[in-house]
Length: 438
Image 1: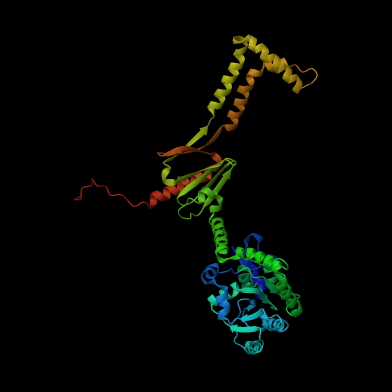
Image 2: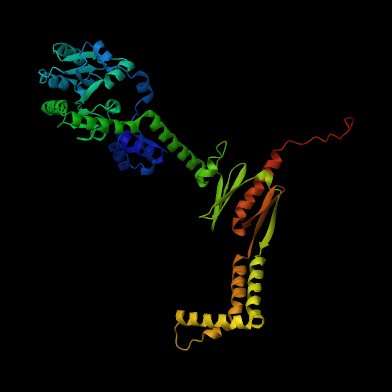
């Protein structure tokens, strides 16, 4: 108990990924301090490869091996033969259904105790029960595939993987609904709940009703198979692999990179540093830097340190913006003299438009239009001043110059350190022209 209160809480708080078998366990771990985003539902998993390998293609052949008629409907219990699993209650149910000659009960599972021996002797005395004991994986799969119902009246269950396996073969489950059973099997959807492990009459009624109502059995069977197919080992391992990959990327910093970049990396690279300013983000590894520009239409450049030959200090000036604005202002100014008729028509239309948009008393649209020619140059000057920034330009023989604002001075310093380290790690070169006699 003390371990749960101290050590377990610490483990749950610092663990990267926590596997839980049911949502109930997930809730319990969250109450103990486990972060919700690190909890991963992993209910054991159905060995779908084994089921595919051992499933019998001829149900009647398996029934003949058991000495039963092909018309028999098997109600199977599979699990360890112990008091906690309560297989004795299953025999109580069988005793009350001896008049239904097409219903046969199967007890299968390992048992090495006085309890299991007493149960075996009792089962041998019932004509509608066959005690198989421990069965091979092949026989277990064939039994599940050929069963009509699965029954479990356990007194305590964490999950109930066996029930998922029966459901995978389209077999509805009659269950006491204790523990994880109430999550695995939904009453009236893919199985039937009794009122606890001692509700023998409830189990008898469920079996009898499903024997008589084939349409309801078919509905439960379809839902059971649909649910269980989500929990095969193949699917669960794929989901776990994605979760582990995501956690590794978060731990190594690779989550800082866009998904399309991560998929192209031949080997995982640890993100050592990241920098961000405005719409530009930089992530650095041991071998290269990644530079992202933009938010909506984002581009990412991968630049190996070996491709950067020099770093230039520069002041970025958008002369083209200023030039375009000045030319537009000049054109607006001279059009009054070059095209006077067009100018008067344009001025008249603009005056009407401005009068409607700004209906203020005493407002003279023509006075605004008179100074319209200076607007493009003014806007261009503002944009020029806003875009005027000091920074750095990364240069290389095969590299298109990349500008970084001065706010990325730490990133530039790191690039210099990595280049210096690469030069220091290079072995000294031997001059082939040196005289060997010197």
